[in-house]
Amino acid sequence: MVPTSHPYVSRGGPKLAAALDAFQLDVGGFCCADLGANVGGFTDCLLQRGAAKVYAVDMAYGTLAWALRQDPRVVTLERTNVLHVEPADVEGSCACDLVTVDLGWTRQSHAIPAALKWLAAGGRIVSLIKPHYEADTGASNGGVLDDDEAQRVARRVLDAMPALGVTVLDYIRCPVRGGGSRKGKGNAEFLALLARESESQV
Image 1 (tube, rainbow, N blue to C red):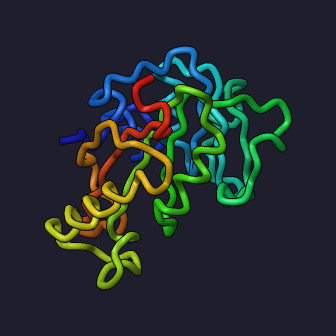
Image 2 (tube, helix red, strand yellow):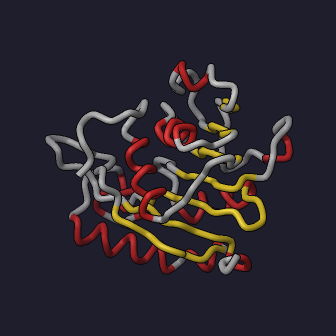
């Protein structure tokens, strides 16, 4: 269980913190990209864990927490579609040691190829899998999936990762329930640790 109070700007913080702990990832000194930054929970977590730079990328404008947009370690990329941006076009961009993914309404089949564009050799991806956006029917419109169905959908998504050019190194069930949350009953989500398929042993 994640406490109702936490030291991050949004509920995304404890989600990523759980993944970093479970996967034993030390991001100290890392250059990172946070795809789907929104308010900045993932970005905040990365900074608190010692990341040297974070590219906070999101389609929205003005949603990233003020404290984060003032932090010199954060490169704010607003009104930016992560599916179409080319990291090489970002001034001063560097290949990233870690890319985090938290994209609403976007399936992993689109998100992972976008994340790979940012990834340095030997880098890792931590992606938040949202079965309610991956399901073919039922709650694919953003409603609440039955937990068993969510698990089945997540398994299907994980099994399809090699076709996207990545290897699943590990995954966990997210300790914070996600989209469609109401009366404490939101969707089950999962966090996956991924490596470029050709580099999974690095």
